[in-house]
Image 1 (tube, protein in one colour):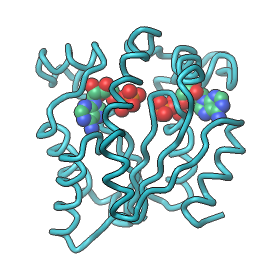
Image 2 (cartoon, rainbow, N blue to C red):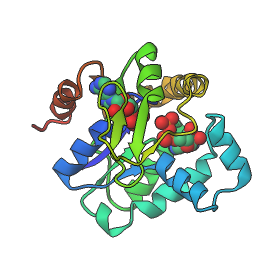
Image 3 (cartoon, rainbow, N blue to C red):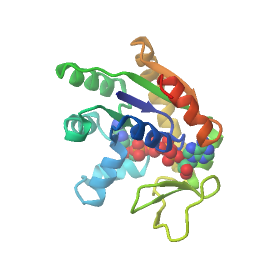
Image 4 (cartoon, rainbow, N blue to C red):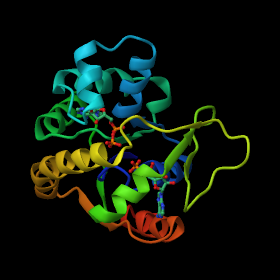
Length: 207
Ligand code: ADP
Ligand code: ADP
């Protein structure tokens, strides 16, 4: 299963991705996570750290390189779920080319649709456990006592708004690109985690 998961920040991609990855035994590959890890390790150039902090995109070559390398690792043998990549048509083309060279292709591009006003609330109240990576929400999925919580620097209302704007501009081209390739499935992301999960599995043709 080779799948691209698309959706605005705070839509619930990380939450749903976990279910898909468990079901298919594939890794979730998130360029945002990889970039944050590089930043924490002090390996990300300052200008890219600044771009990320402002909610802008880092250059295509940077993320294309990360993905080319990561998808050849052992745990990606049975496929992968890409989260946060591709974000631009050139990134989509780079991914297509890379897979083609390996005699592979994408199975599906899943787009999770959630309206703007819900995104702000979902992102601003998001907390992640540093040790386990588990995603919580202060209102909808409260963390247990003793969780070692992290609040992402870019999960502030004004930055989330900027990231949503960037997402909308991006998908204006990326989604039609994948629609033309016959790969796009859209899923309504409004509802409980379980309701959305049901729609997600229906859309990728699995229960
Ligand atoms: P993304 O990866 O798309 O940015 P997350 O999966 O991290 O989104 O979810 C964003 C926040 O919204 C998290 O705090 C998560 O617990 C919460 N969340 C996810 N799905 C739902 C849902 N269906 N209803 C309410 N809150 C949700
Ligand atoms: P979001 O929750 O906004 O979807 P991510 O965790 O996917 O954020 O990414 C965090 C930041 O990392 C982005 O705001 C952007 O600066 C950078 N980034 C991640 N993936 C890409 C990509 N495919 N292309 C360019 N920049 C990216």
